[in-house]
Amino acid sequence: MNWILIQKEELHLDESVTLKDERHIHIRTILKKRPDDEVQVVIQNEGNYIFRVIQITDMESILVKKETLSLTLNPLPIHCFFSLPRPQTAKKILHLAGAYGIHSLSFFATEAKNKEYWTSPIYTKDWNQWIHTGMSQTGNVLFPTVQFGQKKNWKEFLSNWDGNVFVLDRLGEFDLKTFKEPLDQMQNILFVFGPESGWNENDMKYFNQLRYKIITLGNINLRTEFAFSSLLYLMFRN
Image 1 (cartoon, rainbow, N blue to C red):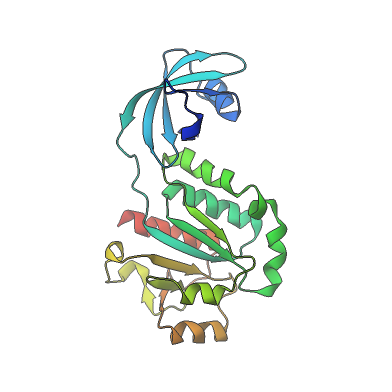
Image 2 (image 1 turned 90 degrees about the horizontal axis):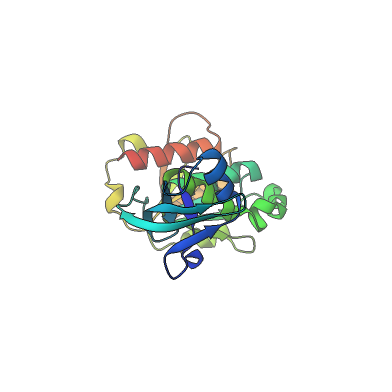
């Protein structure tokens, strides 16, 4: 935890904040802060700041806003769709989304065999805390929009997308590393990650009918979280 993440509604009128949870424990035992020390703080969907420690006890830390910093990271203006991954994989995806600040995540069950994953706590109540771990790591301020399409048709979602859709597949025609179109100038980019076993023939026919570009990250089968990490790295680098 390189940054202490707080919500705007936690601030008092004097722009101080009182922490009594794991953030207090981190400040006291890991960062070993004392009164008058400074702490890096990210306020969700607002900005990056330096806060000064006013008071620290066994039970709580009290910090007050000292100065405003420039944004430490410019969020990536992209959207990502995932064929419902295993819960452990979803944790890594949510963490990375929080770390890089992408605009939205959508999860859909494109295969019937994966529908039991919906009952996992990561999809019912714990998902936001994994985004927060990513934000605390990098100082990203943007909390992405997250959609769980448990009762929605995934193909309908894609066909109604108002923007550019890029489907990732090992055998894709376009290599993202050498793709010529300036992605940062394209509006509402949606990257579509399929099941790790790959898209089936009917899915590929559907994508071709809608004239989606099929993009590859290389001619190897990647775990979903590694493919997502590779995409984020390439986008962030550029």
